[in-house]
Every structure is written in structure tokens, then in C-alpha cells.
Image (cartoon, rainbow, N blue to C red; front, side):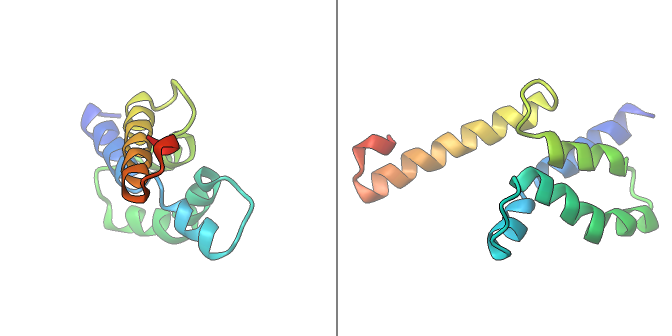
Length: 102
């Protein structure tokens, strides 16, 4: 497998890594959003990506979605996700004036 295919796969996974949050919240499911995301990807996107034959490895995309919270598995996505969540927490604290969220 070429480095371009791996890079494209991880990039696509990074872009849609939190897709499971929508399914989880809309269905009031008590399954972690990473598992919901992998399920949504398998159900709605996996076969479509295979048909358009993009330069991606669908297994790597699914892995990025499913494992982005596991430290050391997909470290760059995990780090970006963590930094982004910290930024939102700080902004929410500033907006509400709640000092405990800063």
C-alpha cells in the first residue's frame, strides 16, 4: 500500500472522525461516538467509497474513525481532537462566564 493511499485514508478519517456524534445524539444511544461513527461509516459510506475508487483504504478510514480516542493508535487525530475539545471548553466557559470551564 502506498504512502499516498495511507495519507489520503487518514486524512479522510480525520475529516469525518466525529460523524458518530450525530447518530449517537439523534438516536439517544449509549454507545461511544467512536463506535457509532465506525458503524455509520460502514453502513453509509464504505461501499460508496469502494465504488468511486478513490485512493483510500476504507479499512484505514474506519480505523481512524473508530480509534481516534485511543492514545497512540492514531496520534495526530487524537491530539487534534483533544486540542479542539479543550478550545471548545474554554470558549464555552468564556461565553457563559463560568470560570470553572476555563
